[in-house]
Image (cartoon, rainbow, N blue to C red; front, side):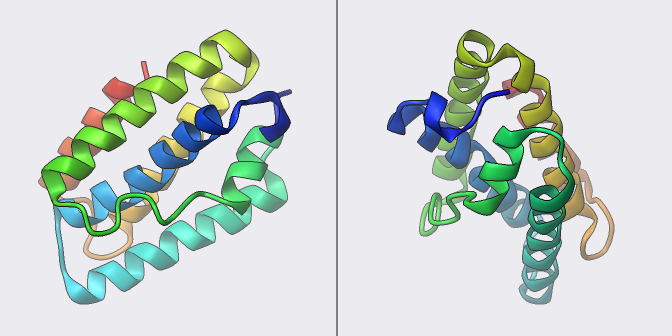
Length: 139
């Protein structure tokens, strides 16, 4: 199993940016002030659970430091572009350097995305569309 020490700083940043960008992207796709608090709470709960129970050391380390500063202050289109780029780069890096962890990362990102989407009023069409884009970027 891979861990942070197996990646260069820029590679680790891409893994973090893909995760953090996913949370923000799903959240801003169907905005609402109170929804944002529920969505942030859902992401935090998901990270906490992963730190304790995920079988992947890589996912445990990412959930401890998901790089949540990424994407703040960006417009939605810029956030989407940069998040998709980070997810594609992360997927490529994992396939080369840690193929045994590639599926665990993909599953974790998609689970977090779904948790955020379901946190407020249930998953909207806009949130589902973003999750589909995220899924496509991870292939």
